[in-house]
Image 1: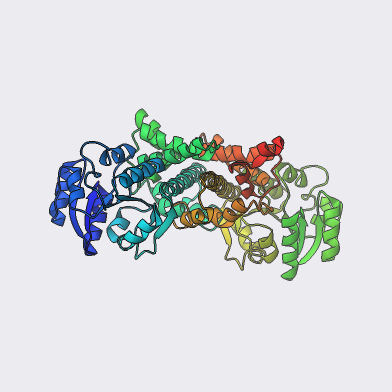
Image 2: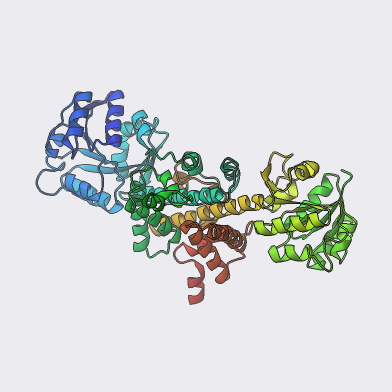
Length: 303
Length: 303
């Protein structure tokens, strides 16, 4: 509990993880964000510093959690030159929670090791409420010994460790996460087609969803997204833009492996299309806007 | 219980439903199959007739269950001219259990009504063991009054009615069934891609499946088909050829409704490809033969 915590990237996920760690008795010493006003507001709330330099986060922290947008942002906060979390980082442990490419996790671990710091990837398969409540599903990649050393902190984020999984070497947790979201996005896109067609046929969608739930068509996304698709309630838990990004990472891994993945490709195309037509900010359930008659961008543009 | 039952189409499903009804105290009076030897063997087992004419089945039965291959076979057993179940069918109730197009269910109901018989569709979302044990998931379409009249018999096939659902007018149960299988096939094809890619990346597939089961990637087909995909155990419960047929029915409905269904199309293409390369007889889990490196038809032909 004596560890000093820094958090870099305090969007909704990062901010809630910082709040949770404070609730658990950790000292959050500094927060940082590419948008300084986000960091400032959170720093006020938590009573901690919000330095403008990344190196200053490292200076006052033993463990630094990062939750940034993408590979480019990861490359920037762990820059080899100039202001960087790596400056003065000897003995620090970085826990990188963003969904970024497995390759960047491997690269960041290398860079950290070079300055005698340690780095883990801790990929999350959960959302904002779970971050706040400390019930994140966490998949960790990196050195086993580093994982064991930092485990108590990870346990306080993952329902007393019930949702904590050590996956393997650096990069593998990110791969598993990408696969989870690839399969989830396929199931979501498929469900949207089933419900959209059911609607076009004039079927009772409540009965249809009940039958789905009791047969081979059942899935987690039926429970989480089915009603939202029918009711057009697409308030965002996991955005279509994120879905496109994650499916893109997985599809890229598939292309490198020279696999033919037509379902993954179709789901990726659908989520990309949502972004293209300006629906990327909707929840992933918003894909139903592309499959129900009379919904979606076509109708909008013809109004 | 005093009803005399005829069964037309005694493949594995039809034969097991006949056995189940006999166990429940019904009198199975006649069985018929396009392959006379199948009917003969079952007739010996059950101690009933196996007439060579369809009209003779109707003559000795009050209720006739049909479980035939496809629309063409439905058209043939309910032919308007020549030998047909409709000859002398006044007062009979037909229960048509095959997965055929919703349109043919509607047509058969019309033809039955014309000769003062009744017809229901009873679409099954279960397999051979469930037929034998009377635990079929049954979705019924047709006139509600006819359904209520024949309910006790349907109850004995569907786990005391716990798995019995009245869906709506004739054709709608077939539509729901087609949608169930369309979504199931999408989820199955997507799962095969996730596991195939996981394998190509060298991930521990047991861990990967555990993570899938605990996250948004979870689905019924993960439980029923996941291990079989990994272990290449594709002994047949629901064949790839059937999956191609059912996805084809659903996709056809979508085209009529002028919907764009890219996931349904991709899953249909995959199952069609299995049939084309001679894998149509494998269980639907066999789709993993198309997505794991070093498996599938390419490898076979290059041996």
